[in-house]
Structures are given as structure tokens and as C-alpha cells.
Image (tube, rainbow over all chains, first blue to last red; front, side, top):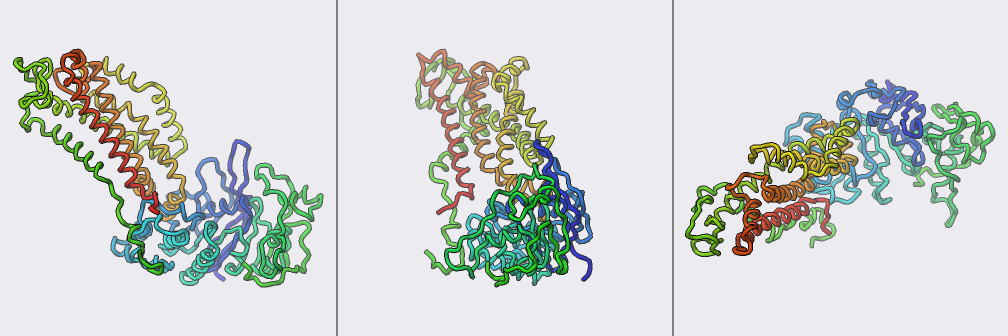
Length: 336
Length: 287
């Protein structure tokens, strides 16, 4: 394989707050090959969104410290000015935001919102941009795209809006698409449609995709690798299959056990993870998950585990008392 | 009603909202005022300064439609000429207020950081001081008074108010994802301010502008009442009301008509501002 499209190396994003520094992302490293989809999974507050925004070069300029390196198609994002980033945005990296209700300008016709990018970034003239925008709308499965071109966002359903958001993000054929919980506000059936759409478009346009979610069902069949994040760090990373069947980190296991499965008998109680995600400003020296972990020992509270190899290629985890090697979660991946 | 399977957007969803008859009546009245103010010297009106000693304090008649004042001057003519001052001050002062307050407010809210802190603190210091006192004080000492000075003083006094409204409106919009989305799609700051933020705050800005004009017209009336506006005998609605005060018992028409003109003008502005806000609010879904 040639050089990866995205190389994130020891990335730290620290917010300076009145309560002291908060390490929202604390030393994350991974890479992403061209045309690969990687899933980032974790609870709310695990640093997924901050990680995504840091990779995009979107963190606020004040009261934030970013260390480490993000190489995007050979360009260093960390420390890049907004002017530099403008060269990369839309053509190299683009983003689909969480909430389709707020990521479209309510007073601008949806066609215009797609046009803008084409005209600003690709220098298309009005007519060419319009034709391309309609094409893009059709590509994301917008029925009667020609008509909808003139619609306002409020005239569309959530699913349709998310399609518009995706069309806008893909307008300049970015090499990398970051989708930050793209289906959070949508119905389950629409969720599947949107995810399948992203998958198809990825194949068509040879993009790489970072798919951020708190729903393991979303990433199960659509990613080649999964990163599990907890308290701003990677706690386990590996091929999707390995994460589902051979996970070693108790947090990953807890996440898997807390999502419903079709194979379960009716009325099975779901496991819950006791406690709450930790406050990032008061992290202990030990493993951040230790207070909620059933297999935690003294060592877990004292010493933070580092990522170590789990055996399978590319599969790493951070735990002193890993889940036994023979995991019992063999089953259908397509449970979500 | 089209069938459920019909793909085309429902016709009624795209049908324009209606502004209503009353809106157009108000627009018509304002237009009449503005046209009158512009073409006052072309219209077949008596000279507003001509004193006819044979017709003092007469009520409405064929010769003088709205009667004459205690110096025998034609009230209709004076109201039309008076609207020049009132309307010029209203529009001029708001042009200054919005010309400075709007860009500053938007920029501060979009950029945040030090610029916002400094500007906002500065504006709030001025807001803490009662504007009308400041306006009266400045105009009392800055003589000789002229229309231009009145416009500048009221205009500058309105800047902090405009700034505050615009900044708050922009803050609410700038935090939304579509602004970040636009940025990520390569839009420059100028484009974001003009194309993403401005249209979103436009409904608030326009209605505040119209209400602002109304307020300034009233303020000019207040100043005129205190003798701080244009010097007599130049008529303005405010100083007409002021002058008529002494002869109110003999000639109530004198205070009624200019007050009515002022009232109707303000009412129309407010009504139009309100209707426009509703009309342009595309976020108000029609269900």
C-alpha cells in the first residue's frame, strides 16, 4: 500500500479552562489509507468530535493547545492557519455534521448552498455550477432534484436534509470525508439509507471516510477498522472483525454487550456500563476506565496502560487485565 | 392535494405568503409622505412661511384644508414641508446608526475574541448613559444647530443600540453548524458574513431599522419640543406641535394635525416592520 492519506501522530488537543487544562484528545495516533473507512466509537464526551474537528483544523484559535501531527495528504494541519486550511477544505477534506437541522442555512435555497462551493473552490460559472449541483442532488438520491434545487431546508425532511449536507460535502470530490455522527437525528430506516449512501459514494468517488458514532451497529459492516475511544484516548484499535470477536479491552466488551442483538431472546435485559464517563479535567494517573471496570485492579488505578499488540496485525489495546483471548461474541456482524 | 407518491414539492409549500391589504395601505401612506417631502416645492402648496393675517386660527376649509395657525400659515403646507425634516432625520440618523453599528456588531459576533470584548465594553459604556440626555446636551452646546448636526448626533447615539441588537442576533446564528459547514466548504470570512450571516439576521435588522426610524422621528419631535431641533420658522412635525401648545385652547386643530401625521407615520413603520419580519422568516414552517 502506498503512503496513507491521513496520518495522525500523538495528537493532543487541550482546552484551557478556568478549572485547569482539559485534555479532550490525549495522544491519539492512527493512519488511514486511501479508500478506507475507519470507525471511531465511544460514548458522548470521549473526544470523538474534538478529534474530528482537530483533524479538520477547526478547533477555536484561542484557549486551545494542539500538539502532535496530523498529516493530511502530505499537508500538516496542526498549526496551519485558516488561510492554509482553506486550500485543503472541500477539495482534500470535507465534513458531514451531526445535525442536519442546523448544518444547512435556513434562508438559502439548498441548490445555492451547493453552488457556492463549486463556484468558490472550483471556479465554475453559474450555469455549470447549477448543472453540477442538480447532478449532485440526484447522486445523493434526492427525488426530482431539478425541483428541489429551489427548495429551502425547512421544506425538506431530516433525511433529505442530510442528503443535501452530504451532497454539499462531496461537491468538490474530497479525498477524505469526516462524518461526525451523520445519522444521530434520523429514524432507523433513514439511518440505514444514509449510511448505505455514504458507502456507495465512497466506492464511486474513491474517498476515505472517518465515520464517527456511538453506535457499534453503524460501523459493524461499513468499516474496515474501528477505533474505540475513551476519555480522549484510543483504548482499542483493530480490524472491525477483531474488535467484534477478539476484543481485549473491557470497555469494548461493555460497549458491545450494551447494544441489542437480534439473536438475543425477547426481553433480554441489556448490560449497562455503571457510572458516568469521567470528567476530563480530573483524570487520575491510572486507566480512565478503571472506576467503571469490573476487572479493575489496584494497578489500573495507579498506572495508565499503554497500547500493546493483541496478536492480530494492527490490533492494539490498552489494558492491564485484558479480556481473555477466546471471546464468545461470535455471531452475525449485521446485527445493527 | 397531490398524491403521496408525487415527488414534486407540494405546491402550497412554495406558495408565497401574503402581506395583506393593510400592509400595502401602510406602504402607500409612507410613500405619499416621502413623495410629499421630496416634491413639496413642486406641489401646489402655499408657502409654509407665508403669514396670512386675514386667516388666523381658522379651522379646516376649502382654502386651507387643514386650517391655519396663529400666524395665518397653512397647516397642510407646513405638515408636508415639516415631513422633510422629520423623515430626513429619521432616515439619515438610522443610516449612520446602521452604517456603523451593523458591520461592527456582525464582525464582533463572528470574530469574538479581543475585538468583541473591547467593542462590546465600549458600546455598553455608552449604553449605560441615557442617550437622550447626551443628545440634548450635545445639541445644546453645538451651535448653530443644523439638520446635519442633528442627524449626526442622533445617528451616533443610536450606534450602541444597533450594535447590541445586531451582535446578539449574529451570535445566535454564528454558533450554528451551517456557518462552520460553509467555512469548511471554502467560504471566506467576507462571504460568510455577507451570504450566511446577513440574510439570517436581515429580518431582525429590517424590523429594528423601521422601528428605529420611528423612534428617531419621535426623538426629533422631542428635541423640537425642547427647541433643540431646526430653528423656527422652518417647520418640523415636532416644532409644529411645540408651537401649537400655547394656542391649544383657541385652535385645537393646530395640535391635532401634526400629531396625527406623526402618529400615522410611526404606526405605518411599525406595522410594516412587523409584517416584513413575518414575511421573510422562511424558518416559520407553514403546516
